[in-house]
Image (tube, rainbow, N blue to C red; front, top):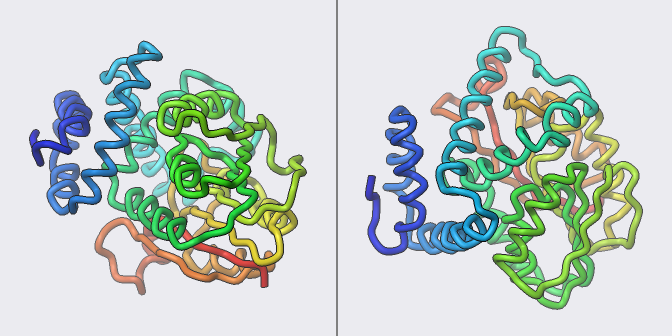
Amino acid sequence: MVIKAGLAYHLNKFVDLIIQKNPLQKKAIKLFLQSQDEEFWIRSDEYCSNMFVLLEREDITLEYVADSYLKMCKDMLKEQVKFKKTGKYSCSTIEEANRKVYYSENEMKPYMYGLGLSQFLWPNHYAMYSYFINIVRKINNIEFYLEIGPGHGLFLVEALKHFENASFSAVDISPISIDITKKVIDQFVPCVKCDFLHKDVREFSGNQYDMIVMCEVLEHLEDPNEILQKIRELLSPGGTAFITTCANAPAIDHVYLYRSVEHIRSEIRNSGFGIISEIVLPVGNIHEDEWEQQKVEINYAALLEIR
């Protein structure tokens, strides 16, 4: 399926494989890609062309990435069906998520490759990624930068490219995730130093940081407030934190259920943060008044400061 020539070459390779394996994906992907501007195609081509090199070096096929993406979609669909019936996430503790996902190469490796590709195939994921890029471009004078749970590494790559003189650290509970992030960093921004720590962030101590980024982590915890307080402790005076999370969004490793946008906001504020800016991204075309009642899936991202 050729959506656009030139800059779309590498992304189309992934898309064609996905649609060959599951034609039901075609409509949603085509609808999204047809509405994208030139900047999207530049970003997606940079990502995909670098991934081609990385995958060849690691002896990983494009088919593996397509299969990883489809596995993630299938897993999420199963979890959504369970959630509609029970109103609960199927994973209830961090220990369970560790055992089932974070320490399992069969689960974590395809999960990270699938999520990386979703940044350019899912409207909400791309919107949050773009939102982060726009925020980073407006911030200067970052000396110490920390990312918690860097996952597929794309957000960290953007920070490494922009904050050239900063000292970077990244902490993740999954050794598999750290290994993938390191490889992504080495390919996308070679010769740029970042200290990686395999650690539960609840046990992490370090410098105070001018910027802390934590994407898609809060919903993986039993007590998100504990981590928000930890970020508050680690943030330097005048520093900012960028977070993303979600409400009513079941996945194989999601533990904490945010039931609404206001639920997310209230816990952020109760942890001592002010919200500088935010984006709220519902899935589907349901009126805002019915989001909570219908348990609408919502992606959320915000830039925070200490109050």
